[in-house]
Length: 231
Image 1: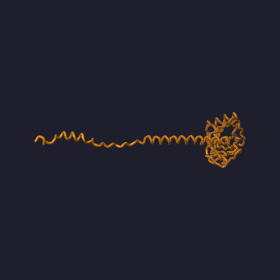
Image 2: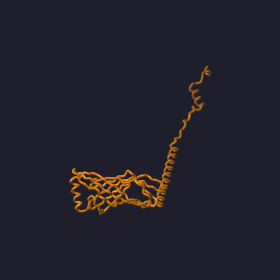
Image 3: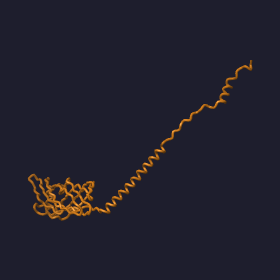
Image 4: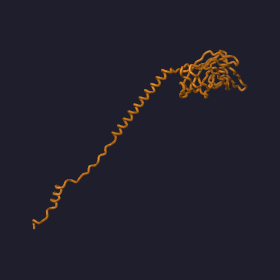
């Protein structure tokens, strides 16, 4: 009877655990990050951009050097030749009617470059920070190595206060009347048959004349010019 007894349960469990391998452990798949690959792509893109910028800079520098070497561009000069006073009349309401005829010389010294002066220009004459009259420059195209004389008619009506009247009397007595002519004109550069981008030329001419008497030629005593370009 003793030999027919079944074996102990813990022995069976111990035998089973020793005979069978441990349960299969599935390996979790590893996903490789794409940071290194994308980082390399960004670096290549940045390098390509820098190479393109360097090539573009060298190309623009070469074009600029060629343009300045071959065409040798020069800034045109402007000069007020004459200023004729057609009217300078005090009205009963203490306003001032003014009419000037200003002769302006535009000199283009370039051999291969011309200029197109647009119609949307403006010119004003100022005395002691007060506008006396205004007008427009004629629209025209100026070729290379060309000198053009422009006649600009300028008319206006302005308030003539006591301060302006006293300053004008003093200037008339001294024979030195300061005026400021401000001109703004759109200009387009022409190289051969190619028209470049339009820009604005600003010319300030400070001049001193000896009189403002109507129908009497005013003599220009001194002039000073300031030219700037607005793109």
